[in-house]
Length: 349
Image (cartoon, rainbow, N blue to C red):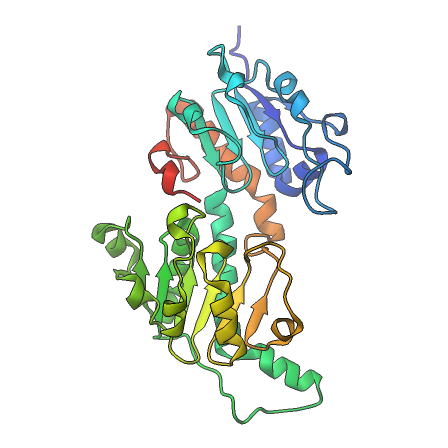
């Protein structure tokens, strides 16, 4: 009698599945699992589904228990409701949660990990997309491209009082050695930058492996390029203070793709509007922001709507990223790059 295939419930709407599951991963799922796909009948109506207009509908919390019953693996993503510990109350709940999205803090309680459930997050895959955003934003603002673009569109030409700068060989301050920071560090290597990282949890040995140096927050924030990569925890709220912003060198480029509350936003906007520094903001406090026209017109600001990790290729890769790690864990206990370690839960994004 052949061994049965493990049972997997995809707690994502059909629309979300189209967004995060590529063709190869669908084939892999059907080959290696007995798959239960959520249908449109399991999703909330658009009017009651949380999220912004146009986003795929969320799964109805009332059907989670039904879909998850008797499963070994749960495939989740944006729109999956919180998975209560009652799913594991009888000791026979799913052994794996594979989250085809970023943070799992709103998805499961840490007690679930402590009970031996393996949780996987596609955060490290999203990190690569974020790293590309940060690199692109640095280059865009260092070369003052928004200003030159506006000049040409307005019928002008060269702006002789402005000249862009190079990233090559520059000092880059990085606050937080998260997965997004590590992706950016990898992309910075060809530029030969002096990468100075502030993170109290980054060891000297790990810094050497990354090819960076550890430093103080003050030193990181004295760089002509500064990128923020911290989780949204009480310790990071307001950590980029007015004083640090005032000490940024003239013409500095600051990129925040992590969390809006990490920065004194009024101070940052004041210095950008004054023309002293440049900033790329993908996150805000609050979201979405309600900026005055002077902010919206500023050529010292690059403003994007929390999309640093949102790419077509990146999204389609998310399910495959966690499912392949989940399969390795089921086979021999291997902890792949998407494995969520309970020991670092408190400082994770």
